[in-house]
Image (tube, rainbow, N blue to C red; front, side):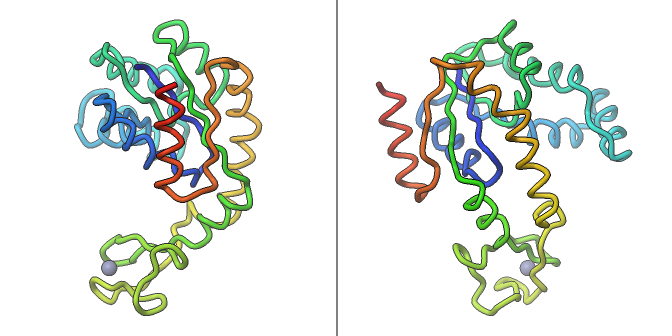
Length: 205
Ligand SMILES: [Zn+2]
């Protein structure tokens, strides 16, 4: 099965994509993970990508597509793709080569996503992640593992979150209309277990 999963930040799509991948025995291809791996590998493409990211620029679509297509081609049996496409032109590029069979849409109201992200903390020393409501440390603001200070990632600052949400509404939501009948809408405003049950039920239909 060839699946796309889309949803705003903090919709839980990474977690659900992992569960789906395990259940269907297909790889979870996350564009973010692929980019990081490519950088780490030190390949020619990785070096090119690293220099672009270090300059603070956006990695051009051709490079991202080159990398993603390479992974898709290795798994003709199927995959679940996460983080790409984010825009209509990217979706059309994907459709020309590897059209997805279904598109899972994980829906979460903006306010819920914002609340989930606002509570995220990370240890300054060891990088362990926490959430003030869902995964709190024993002592406020202090890492359980090493006593390090818990801070917010700059990516999780309200301005950064608002910018990504606006981008999602403007650029990614048009994909819902584009994929129309392939779209499977899932209510992501529930616990992980419940969402997972819904997904399994909807995918087996
Ligand atoms: Zn720590």
